[in-house]
Length: 392
Image: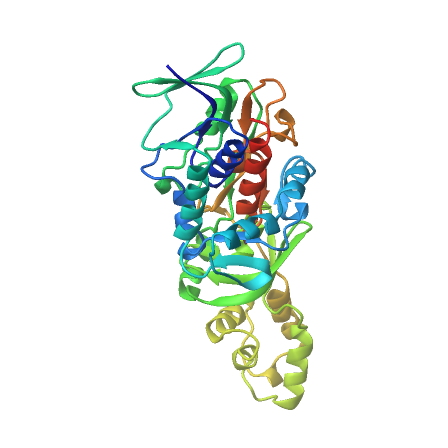
C-alpha cells in the first residue's frame, strides 16, 4: 500500500487546480485519471481554444438548489486570479462577446500550464487508471485500483458529470456520494440543444442553418443571444442558456426581433408600400426563409394592402412573442455540462469538504453548481478546486 496526503479522483480543470494548491502547501498529492490523458474536456472546449473564464463572473451566473453556496469560493478565487496565472505563463488571450476569454492559439496551452504547475509542486498524475473501490478507515481512505491500493487522509472527487460521454464522462462521482449516503440532486443535461415534436421537426429541417439574434425566456429568466435552427430543433447560445432553466412541460418564449415592435413596423410599411407582399416586408426584419416560414405558420399571406391590422398583429405576435413547447433535449450526448449533482447541503462552502465525512471533498461539475454558457463553468472549476486545495 502506498500512502499520500491527498488523492484526487479526476484530472480535469477542478482536480488539477486542487492538486496545484494542495501541492503548494507541501502536501503529497496523487491525481488518478481514468482517461488516457488529463484535461480532455479542456482540450475540446471553446472550439479548441478554451473559454477559460469570464471577466463578468458573479454568483448570479450559476444555478444551484442553494443560490448562496458558491459565493464563498468565487469570491476567494476570481477571474483575475486565473488571468494572472495565464499571463505568468505567457499565454496570449482575447476577449470575445460578453466577457468571454479565449486562448489566441490553443486550449493545449492551458493544459500545459496546469501540468507545469503540478510538476512544480511535485504532484503525481497517473492516467488510464480506474478506481475499483473506496474503503473509509477511521482517519483515512483506502483507494483500490486494478493492481494496487493507495491510502490518503484526504480524498477529493473531481470526476465531473455525465455530459459528453464520448469523452469518457460518467456519473461515477454521484455513485461515490450515494455510497456514503449523501444527497444527490437529480442530474440532467444543461447547456444543451432543445428538441421538438413531430409538429415541428420537418419545419425546423427546412430552417436548418438559420441564425438570428433573439430574446428567449423561460419563466422569469431571459437571455439575449443568437438562436440557431437545426434539423433536430433549436440550438445556439440563447437556447443553450435557457435549457439550463427549462423543465419538462414548460414553454419557452422567443422574441426574434428584440427591441423592435414588429406590428408598428408592418403598419408603417403598409402605409409607405402597400403593394409589397407580407413575406417581403417581413424579410426586411428577419432572414428570408424564416420570414416566409412565419408567414405560413401564422396563416398570413398577400400584399400589405390586403391585410387587416388584426392579421398584421397576429403575425407580429409570433415574431415578437413566439410561444413554443420543447419536448425534450438532445441529452447528455451533446450537453456541455450537467445541472444537479452532489447536494451543496452536504458540503462546506468554505472548504468543499463533506460535513458528515471528514476528509472527503467534492469539487467542480460533480457538485450541484452549474454555470451559464461563456466560461463560467471553468471559473467554478478553478474556484472550487482552489477552495478545497487550501484545506485538504
